[in-house]
Length: 97
Image (cartoon, rainbow, N blue to C red; front, side):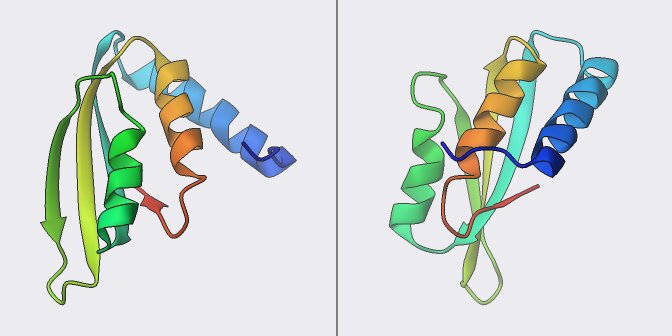
């Protein structure tokens, strides 16, 4: 995994605080990603959650260029949510919502 810049560190620190303030853990957490409509990219996103028993849903954009991938996963804490997002940041052309 790539080293984090100070801005990324600050972002994840603030994100963790917001998660802890607004989410009761453990709980189901909804992750949303936008990826180019490409089976390889979609599979990369799905592999992030191997072993987590996710529930996936997908929806192609109107023109078919992008696919929205939603994963609902049972997580134990904010650190686990952040772990998934950091892992997703390594996937080329993925947008995290």
